[in-house]
Length: 102
Length: 100
Image 1 (tube, rainbow over the protein chains, first blue to last red):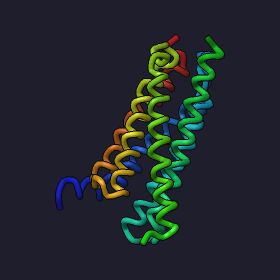
Image 2 (cartoon, each protein chain N blue to C red; image 1 turned 60 degrees about the vertical axis):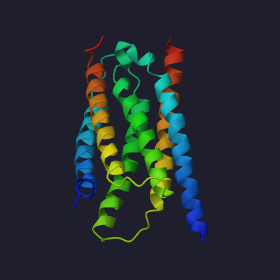
Image 3 (cartoon, chains in turn yellow, blue; image 1 turned 135 degrees about the vertical axis):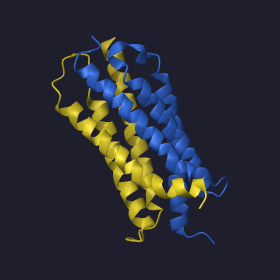
Image 4 (cartoon, chains in turn cyan, yellow; image 1 turned 120 degrees about the horizontal axis):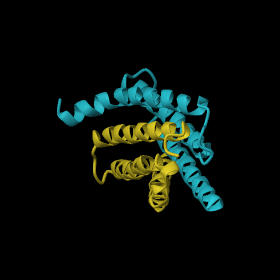
């Protein structure tokens, strides 16, 4: 097996590991008592929502890789449109907040 | 012969690629603002969003058979997640008041 094929096989699994770390950090961020009044957390909540959609997509990829499910790969396209839409909304919210607080 | 399912998938992939380029440019337009201390977490997040745009373009190229880089489309998300983790760590520090 080539390096590229090995990476392709293992990547969804260690991506899930990195996601677990990100989830723990999101939990810390949202349960923290915010001391800086300039902090605006709504875009981060949207990034969290995008991460949750990514988790579902990666889980389906891993399960498909091990032949546990047979959902076609086509559904990933819709997940990605959702993720990007969420990112764009988060960016626009942050831009608007920067303008209104300037 | 392409099925309606293939058409919908292809349109979804192209939509994702175009929207990700727009998101990438939007993210870059925020880069100057991210120099402010309370927005320092947005710098690594902007890198993550630009990498996401790259990932979507690679995915679209793979789907249409232009350039098949199977391993790359799985490795790039790892870097996206790494930048996201860095951004979260910075944002937690900002929220704690370390950058006031």
